[in-house]
Figure 1 (cartoon, helix red, strand yellow):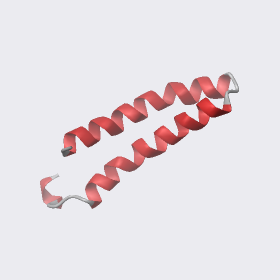
Figure 2: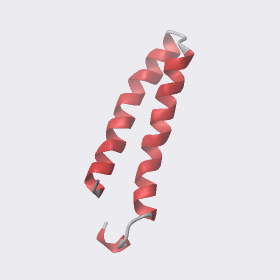
Figure 3: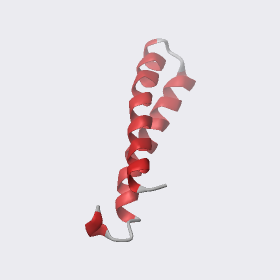
Length: 60
């Protein structure tokens, strides 16, 4: 998995998490809200992880 795939995964997770959080909060479905929040957290942590694990930081 290269850098662009990781960023695409992060974007996809964050984009899909927002409707889940919104629907889960408005319909009071705690499990759906929690899954959406977890997806948002993981999607937000992927880009810094890519930066810290890069073999050549100047290449990014």
